[in-house]
Image (cartoon, rainbow, N blue to C red; front, side, top):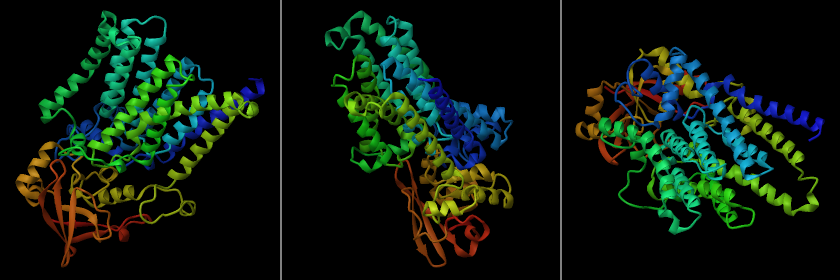
Length: 532
């Protein structure tokens, strides 16, 4: 590139970097999804000496373990300050996000993709979703790091056994970062082994290939086994309660709607990449890369479609798919540029680099605009509403602060939804009816005692739920029946999908109607009742 072009690229690159890093620290509470606060709240309780618990009512293992280690470390660095801990977590995740871009660049160099920068807009669109404070960035960093390490081991200078051991260790950490990475990891192990065998079945039993497979699998097992053993002996199950609830099924079923729109797009590009593997555009290194990622993405999608009956539409489910798609855009751009010679100038690398950086900058600007207020829930219906509203925090944050100001720390509340951010800002002990951040014993106890008996035994005195249950979004873990002067909440055991009885909500015992006491225009029609 010429000197002027280089200066322009540096300026645009710096603008993209700053527009990605700074806004999230201006209003950090607006960026994470509610589920992301599960990690932060548990980490806060671990730091405070209460152990692995979301609410100090029941213990929990309802999270992916490796990210929790970093969240706890953030609280120690912040000396327990919740806002500072959130800043630290976001900053660390931004480093991981840039690390993912670095690995995409390194893989593209290894695959000789000169349009690698076309991956940037795809990644920044994905980064603009509610990924902060969840395991997503760590998950993506380790998955793409494992893929890069495997490619270096396969196509670098000599297939040294220790390089494959490094792949196994990184793959083990990726599994601890997000347990359903096992599909991409399994794909990585399979195609790495097949590549070592030169795709000949007869070579699979050779000493060299068996040695490679052992160097892959044993380090992986050494990393993952202690967590699985701890889970089993502490909670009686190998996997977390959240994973057990989401996959609690009596058999196979078909639920394509369980995959989000983003997930379906990722599936489409995984299929496209598999087709590309059969073309002349894919040499052995490119074929190995796309087979590892695309088959893993499709296997994970099949698990969601046929085995999962819960909310799986959040962006952190599809990080591997997004990275696979970003590489797909890089190679597809190269294919187009190589065949449409009449657009040679328009598709020149320096022109496309400028377009990719400008587009990335616009995407980051959109994210800034989106999160200056908060994601719409009830009242705000259009971007015109966004523009008319002043920049502010989310209604859940205001609700949590109101609870913290009006009730003693440690007040026990059972809630129907949004437990994460409300717990984080209120200081109250929030019991979520979906069970994802409780434990296995919670499911047995509410069936044994009945939900009313359980609430009394645990000293849970308040219910936070909809004022008009008929107009509220219904969930799979409770049912509501309107009664004279109130309503009745039937709670289901999330793990067993069985009724645990019900408790009464009386209008005469309503403590607050939040649309009346909060200033946020987006506040849903929620209330707080005393139920003891």
